[in-house]
Amino acid sequence: MTKSNTTLTELAKAISNESVKIVDLTNTLSPDFPVIILPPEFGQCEQFKMETLSRYDENGPAWYWNNISMNEHTGTHFDAPAHWVTGKNIPNNTVETIPVKDFVAPAVVINISEEAKINPDFLLTKEYLMEWEKIHGKIPPKNWIALRTDWYKLVGTEKYLNMHEDGAHSPGPDKSAIEFLVFERDCLGLAVETIGTDAGQAFDFDPPLPAHSILHGNGRYGLQCLKNLDKLPTFGSIIIANPLKIEQGSGSPLRVLALVNG
Image (cartoon, rainbow, N blue to C red; front, side):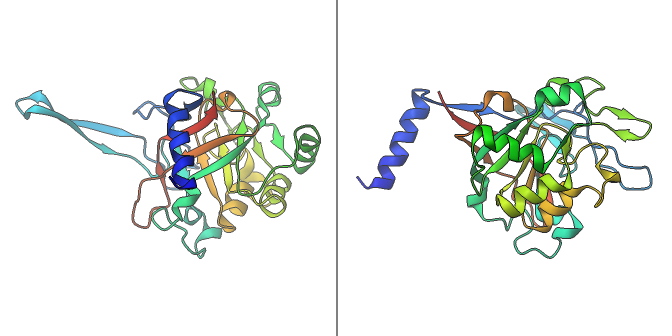
């Protein structure tokens, strides 16, 4: 047996005996799950819709199936570089052209849940990350940066979108944090439990929406609307995030899983 076969066999055994556990990081996709709300002058993201064609009835006595429709960025979803104007000329910038190795990658979990609980507009900064590294260790390259806010616990309430007259209020990174993660730590992308990778008020930042602008302009990815990041360790988990293979797709709803030691 080759070494690679041994590694895969051992992994399969570990999953089977639950010494490696699988954690579902995905919110259930339904017509009730909220989508991002843009200023009214822009096109809007369509919520998930489902129409039953037959369910063991006169329209199909032996089968059940539905028509579904949604925006690419509905529910738990993946952002490809082409999603943002800064990434429009990046090679392999749409979901069907991204190297498949990028869909299975390690993760570093940054826990800002207490800060977000106190201040929904909490901003992750480079200074915060450098202090975090003094306690937890240096962030390795090619990792997802999973920003734990426990925001998923607000799903089903108005506080999830947290819309006010001046827009949404939710935590996220500032420009310094994203530049640090991309240019100094070579992250694969940013994974969040909120509706978007940017803070709710980031449209008013300089540059506007720095997570989208800097991540996608440098060929990195985004994962939004995750759950259960509180069930992952700081280091040592593997995220599996496979978007649908949509031709020229800017993103995709998906089922995100994590492998963690049991």
